[in-house]
Length: 58
Ligand SMILES: [Zn+2]
View 1 (cartoon, helix red, strand yellow):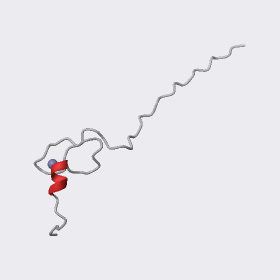
View 2 (cartoon, rainbow, N blue to C red; view 1 turned 90 degrees about the vertical axis):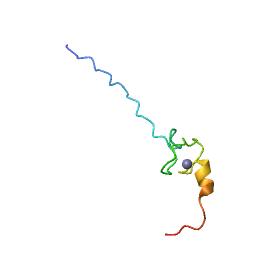
View 3 (cartoon, helix red, strand yellow; view 1 turned 180 degrees about the horizontal axis):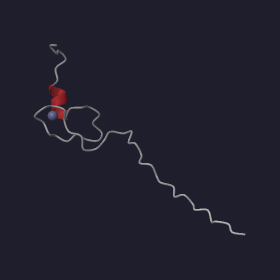
């Protein structure tokens, strides 16, 4: 009897998709490189978020 030993396939852990905010984001504002906080769900930094006016002329 010649039985080949079954190779155990290594379980490769798939990289988790981060559902939370990605760290290292920067402010979407053009000349702003402020790194957003992980807890900041806005696309803008704190300063530019406040600078946004309710009235936007489009
Ligand atoms: Zn900004």
